[in-house]
Image (cartoon, rainbow, N blue to C red):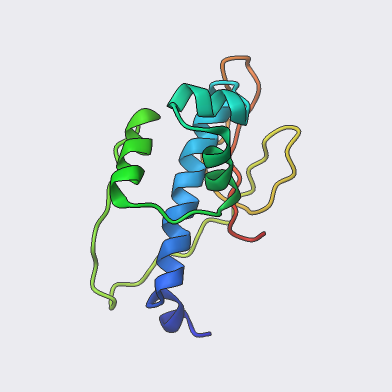
Length: 128
């Protein structure tokens, strides 16, 4: 598939949004020292629903994406660009969460530490 075909496909943008939501939730979970059950309780959702998001098995309404973002202290932002505007390639910086097998390389929160003083990072579902 060509790059032009990829960035004009519906699936590319759905996965992009899912990955960003995953990164935000996983970051919040790690920064606050929570497991998935505790994350679900903190956000007021079932563990099954949070697991669906973190496993990439979801397709949300816009209102649910906004609600989730606000609950983790983030502001959702979306913009529309002409298809002729080039899409930036993802960073190749490797980020590791201690004790978690990395599944893709992204750049996010390098050098930050959670409340326990452990170094954190983010993984995504992108290359599973």
